[in-house]
Image (cartoon, rainbow, N blue to C red; front, side):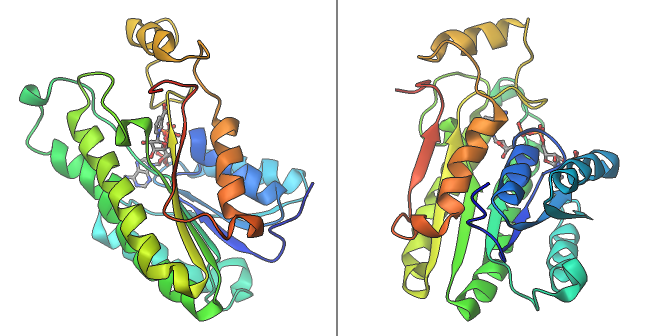
Length: 255
Ligand SMILES: NC(=O)c1ccc[n+]([C@@H]2O[C@H](COP(=O)([O-])OP(=O)(O)OC[C@H]3O[C@@H](n4cnc5c(N)ncnc54)[C@H](OP(=O)(O)O)[C@@H]3O)[C@@H](O)[C@H]2O)c1
């Protein structure tokens, strides 16, 4: 255990399963006190927390639907009180991980598909970063890490056009915000996963899974822990000279 993040407070959105659960577990292993955010599945968030505590780490759950403005506000409002208020309003590490995708041809997409993608994948990270940045500027230290996608860098497959648009947006936001916060000791970066075995991605045994596997230079889907390792680096004190970067972790999927 490095404990490089001892004394830091981290918020990981969408941490009840998949990539977010791995990120929360990894940051806790590195010493951070972690807010395990979830949308509706409290039981799964509690399971993540139990595993973290059993390993000697610190974690608490907060639920909020980030596809709605009220949910974002509720999550922000909870920050001052977490861990008995011992962080006094500080937030050191924000990992904007919660996200969603709808598959299918753009010309057949629903009227609400734009909102589904952009409210959760873009608006919520933007609003959370706005609040977090003010807390981090006060402390003269902070790490904002957005979980984008290899689909934020390239479009290797059809059928995810609005998702691609939302992930390109988050990559642009990462770069723009890094320019504004660097002088305060706050870095802003993204990690862009390729296909990772979670409930969001095509499932093993399907044609989509086979196609996506073929595209990866390493010939397999990635593991959530492999994304968590990249986030852990960007969150660490030694990554202070890395900002505005979008690190693609995709097994060579878009190489
Ligand atoms: N898996 C991949 O292949 C892949 C590839 C590239 C990028 N990514 C990106 O990685 C991130 C995580 O993906 P994942 O595969 O780990 O997803 P996942 O397994 O589907 O998990 C999604 C997480 O987000 C939460 N969530 C869902 N809807 C929400 C809402 N309306 N408000 C707040 N939270 C919500 C879920 O909470 P509940 O459990 O409570 O529902 C869950 O914790 C996303 O940004 C995704 O775009 C994934």
